[in-house]
Image 1 (tube, one colour):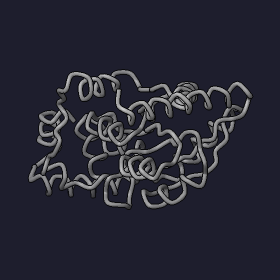
Image 2 (image 1 turned 60 degrees about the horizontal axis):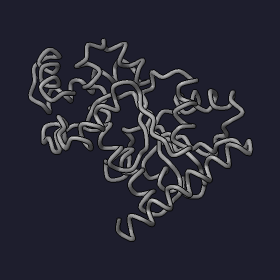
Image 3 (image 1 turned 180 degrees about the horizontal axis):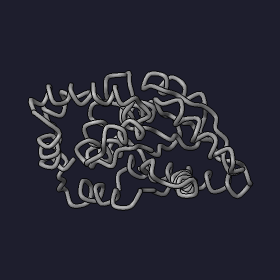
Image 4 (image 1 turned 120 degrees about the vertical axis):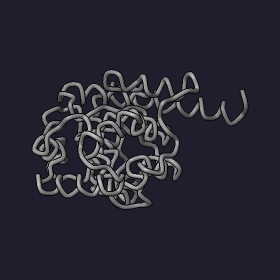
Length: 243
């Protein structure tokens, strides 16, 4: 083992021990919430407030705001949405990568509506220690936060398989670069994935906390950018890419 690897292992062991001591002492875990929807942030904070084991120490709605606020908050775990406005367009992965590169000692748990393999892999590559979808229950979310705070990993069912494929076997179905997909904004990609999976416009609007009119606008933009005629062609396009 190299000196750098030895130092990294020692540091991780020390952080895990510190997290364990903190929980043993009864101190609540400090959680920072990053999501571009105020309603979602409010819901998460309300859920965590009902558990004495957590205290929310900050929140942010964009990449730039998150990068600016997280270091000063000294949180144990950052709940991180994957698709966020601002920054260089890298969303949650950009937040995790830049915050960790600056030496901030916090752990990231991705919390997203997306269960797409490329989203999971990109944010884990950036340094997140887990990924759960917004379909999880309050108890499941609490357990995932505790696991990540202790140094363990936490994933919603089947999502861990994406990570094993990408990091364990060296093979993955996730395209490293897709020029067509890159044409879409983060929000358009969210809408595209839900519509491609059979969600109605109303269901998509409810899932993403936006209006039906906004969904229609995004779908029109997606079809135009991808040069597709209808949602059936969109579903085939997405299926061919494992989205």
